[in-house]
Length: 216
Ligand code: SIN
Ligand code: FE2
Image (tube, rainbow, N blue to C red; front, top):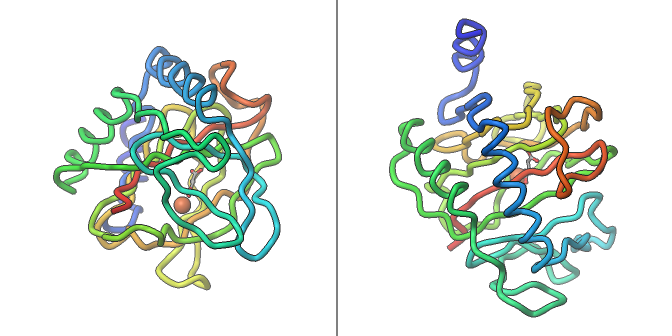
């Protein structure tokens, strides 16, 4: 197992670190309990893209700022678009883990102000994109996976570059920083039936992803 993960880490480009199985099942459940409370306070919604169609996945946010999209564009807002309330705080365990792992990845201190909660149904996916709505790309992105496996595509700095497939499992934490911060990435598909746990927050056959960023 160690050898497999060591090899995998070596194949990742500079600035990208995949921490496999970093969260125990107990920790995953505790974070999902917190996500359930976040969803109760800040109901998930399917944003409209600036081009018109609605996103496939629903989302919500926690932290001082939340990522949203509508006809006016992609941006960060301090309040939920329909309730008008500020987003609930980022769970302390998520923040602590993200800070420990950015340090471990050699990316220094981390002070995220936004956490996007992506909710994938069994048929969910996310097309290739860059996280491009933040002010300063020196801050890394830290992403947590819960529930069913996701076939994650890691691309290059331009859209047409070759992509590498990484299957993200529940409890994995993925860090994109340094020269990899601006890489294209997406989720090709979810693999229902692969989750090591069930939880009220998780859609049947689906997956939840938490993505932390420093937006401003
Ligand atoms: C994202 O790029 O916003 C989410 C990635 C993921 O779901 O793993
Ligand atoms: Fe992204």
